[in-house]
Length: 411
Image (cartoon, rainbow, N blue to C red; front, top):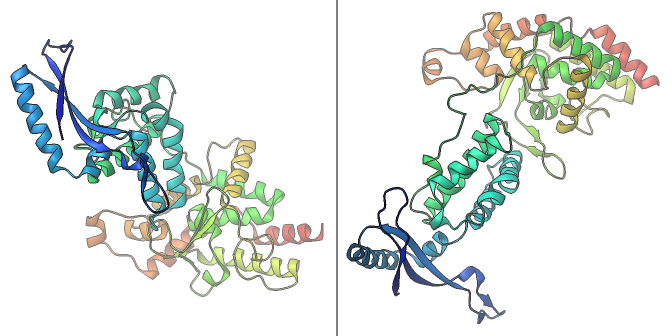
């Protein structure tokens, strides 16, 4: 495993002499061509491990000897990995995530979008052993100045890059992670934009506008607000999850949007199911909806709770988002579907609901201190359900809902 040394230009910063140290590792196994029996038909290109040394020639020769010993002590596959490009690491990392059963498809697609749209075009061709902190600093700066991405998007993009490089360190393709030392411009000093808020009056306006246009969607919107569930969780509610005696909905699954359609996940975002109390007002709305759908389809609905065809087909999560976005824009309300979760959280806070109860109802985590010393209960949850149902009482009138569904079925 011979090594070579090549004199480079002195450093422009301090004038110190620089040397490139190179050690031959072998042939790239990923580019070696074999026949069906495993016999090598064409060797892969030669692979070298390299590094830059700063100092005198005698010290550089000593550093080369040390580098040769280091490479000899390292598994060949790891060295080959270190001399691969960032693009190759990204491919292997995404492949690893695709085979992870706990990885949400929407999260994987988000990572893939950042990789293909931003990271790979800018940094993918750089070899891992030549990737520097300054390369990543320049890349992140370009996302701000040239691509004009938001601080939140840049922070997520950097997190994706950092995670991929961390996996490279685990595989020993890198000795350290240059993304950890990179500066994420603007995200530390500037405040991230606050989530849009919604008043109870705006919630009422939204529900009533949907009722005139699409009664089933009005029920979805109202249910998303009163339950505080995420959109995929509302899509995943089934009639057997509804307990009118306890005035609860059991949340334990969600529809996750992705390429080619949505997929059903048998667990929530937090991985734990929960009972959400919706109060007597919530029970009235759902019982009204049940009766109206029974009259519309000629049988009692079963299966998916909010559905155009009596439970056979669930609502499409992306379709609901698109509908609500258009409706909000038409109404001049600056918000989005997820804002309904913030509306419920705010209402619970206004009504004085204690933190553990509110967190349990929303499917949020709370601090260890609060979890240890404060506890929720079904009685408190039921009281919270009554409060939120009262707050949403004017948003959707049961009589108006029944009439609108009947008119829709008749048309």
